[in-house]
Image (cartoon, rainbow, N blue to C red):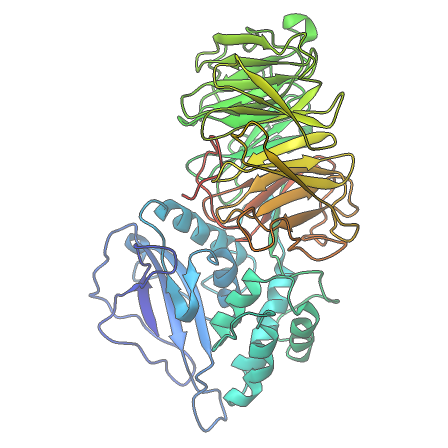
Length: 564
């Protein structure tokens, strides 16, 4: 057994062994980490890794047996720190840290995303109590529910190997954890990592192994996939959650329909019991964060402005920067969507009069009622900004179009592409993706800066797409979509624009991902710097966090999706 500090030269980079030599456990599996080691820094992420080991009654060690437990910041380790390494801690590690973990226990992050890794450890500690090796975590917030039975089922699958007397019994696990066309794992930790990264692969085989080795309380039936998730309530979500966004610290912001904005820390703790209210916040279908961390909320219908809505700006502490009734300059009229650009400007799509407003970071109008009378913009419900600071507008009224608007609002061009695009996301290459609510499809617009961009539409009756609403692009360019009217609610994942088959459906057919997570009317979706997917459920007043499911992105999202 060795204590490691995570690498700092990239995801999965070589970690630093902190002990001068590995520690060997005693006959009961107990161990003591000797003092005298030096932390690379007080904030360095640490973890324990155990290799090999001899099961009671066996004549030799089982080299396939690898276990892991996340510890946390090196400076927080004390003489009283207690840790268990078992199948449950290994599953929690593999899922929460999956985007930072490479085979054979190499854990690391880029120098620009140390916080993403640190927050991933926080998530791991929600999944498991490191001191006891059981799920959920010791300090999981009361408003957070962990998919413990699913996690335990995965732990039982690992136990088919870890409780065996030799490597022969591990062959079935290692085979089941090998995705089609993928690399076979060589140990239990790598098997867990493979399953975490390919959660729709060999689900039945893995469940069968778990049932034969049920040492932890597990699921009564095979799940549709192996995504682990947590459900978050409270903090203002009772007001019907809609849009969702992540700030630079990994805090999660959620706008609601009935006049509150919720904020949660990375572990799901609410910042305010009932959210932030007042300041003109009402019927808030959309929100965006700017590069400074301020929060911009589009309020579709409010008492000021003759009931035609306003835009609220909050600090990261939830204090208003837009007065008591929000900004209304520039022709704000039932604002339905909002986005920020890297200069601090704010784009607002006005569904009421089919126009767009451009504000500066003080709420002063730079361009008012863009598109008025042009016939190009029609009941806009989505907006996103590309790297050239062009705004892309999803029109849900006349014609299946989106509109590209120049950075100053002076030039517009319509592109025929999509039926009722209620969500827009832009990838690192400025490819534009839209979620088309009415015809259950996703559109991809490439060569987006050209006079005649190319359009591809993706749909499949077995894709799980059903009234797609929220859309996000992860750090690898893959696309994640919420299926609003799917029952139960689900997510669809598509291959990105640079994949060998762009737009290929990667999620399970028909049901999609997460159909066991009890989502109801999943509306918005956001990805954090740890790789967690966050989904707002407007139908049951909750947020679902899918652990480590996506490649991390830089937060807040200002312009196209970027790596941290």
